[in-house]
Amino acid sequence: SQQGEEDPQALSIQEGENATMNCSYKTSINNLQWYRQNSGRGLVHLILIRSNEREKHSGRLRVTLDTSKKSSSLLITASRAADTASYFCATDASDYKLSFGAGTTVTVRA
Amino acid sequence: DADVTQTPRNRITKTGKRIMLECSQTKGHDRMYWYRQDPGLGLRLIYYSFDVKDINKGEISDGYSVSRQAQAKFSLSLESAIPNQTALYFCATSDQGQVYPRQFFGPGTRLTVL
Image (tube, rainbow over all chains, first blue to last red; front, side):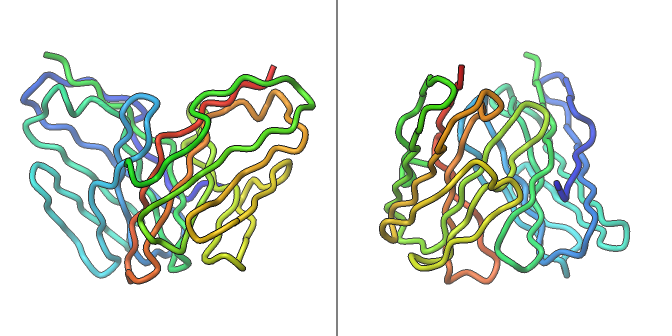
């Protein structure tokens, strides 16, 4: 069964706007990771946040983690057309296996 | 990621046929994984291997088998393909030396079973 669930399933925004997506999970984790997938291609790792961290930044990405609520959010600021992709959260429960959610599809309109 | 390659990239086969999907990596990672992706379901783990002598079932291993021929090679077989195995298949690797490893994915194999 899948550990994570992303919300919303799909998101359409104007270029320059921010995009926020959320991930909820069910069991305790060691870390949570976000991946991007361009249409039909392999996933690319974006950012990892450890269970003892609350917020992390990487370029235009900001990830938060609330272990008490078992949830995480990914914020992409100042979106670009190239950010159009599907975004997946993946949880690692200390066994080096990742459990992926179903993903959020983001469309950035020019 | 060009360091993880999958062959073939696309395959159309018929019900009942045996098919093998191959994965090779030049990253020197011990850990390798096979996933399938279906629309709306994200990625699901089929099998994983933490070294050449270690093979483990994932959440959806029924109907699949794997072979870890070498550190760099991990193959997925469908002994008798069926239409509901139509999906996008991904191989991934991760570094055993990292405390918090991320995974590196191949480009995927699109498999259609008629």
